[in-house]
Amino acid sequence: MTTRIDCDTCVVRGLHCHDCVVSVLLGPPPELTVDDDEMAALDALASGGLVPPLRLVDPRNGPVIESA
Image 1 (cartoon, rainbow, N blue to C red):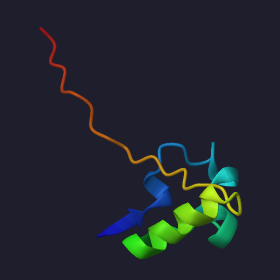
Image 2 (cartoon, rainbow, N blue to C red):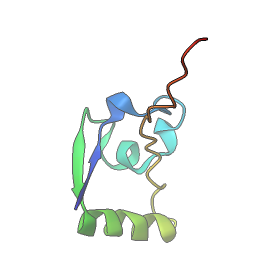
Image 3 (cartoon, rainbow, N blue to C red):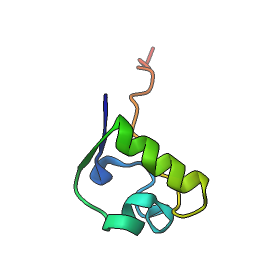
Image 4 (cartoon, rainbow, N blue to C red):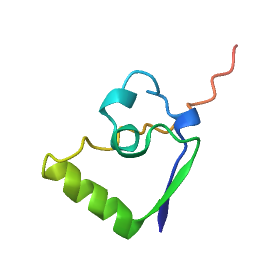
């Protein structure tokens, strides 16, 4: 499995870029794909306090609300 990191669609882009592992290690890329092993390594680095955690927040579609 892979995780697609698309900073252009991150809901908290700009608010948390300074404290996100992507920005710390690479600068904000337009899109990045990270596999499970790489994600585990990033999590281990963040757990050890060596880098900040991934702050990516994917947009989600909310419920459809129709007017009466």
